[in-house]
Length: 68
Image (cartoon, rainbow, N blue to C red; front, top):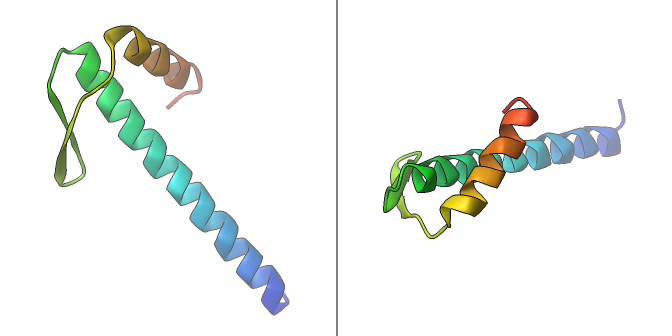
């Protein structure tokens, strides 16, 4: 495997990890919004929930369909 292939594979793994992390964040906030909470715990942090229940439900439904 060449050096550029190795870098490319690392970059792809990094992008996938970032996308999964973003999905986890969005899903956690959406679930909290549906539950009527003011904050959501994401990892070690408490983040404010600023999402409507309607938008949150659409996000959760879509992510559940994808098997999240």
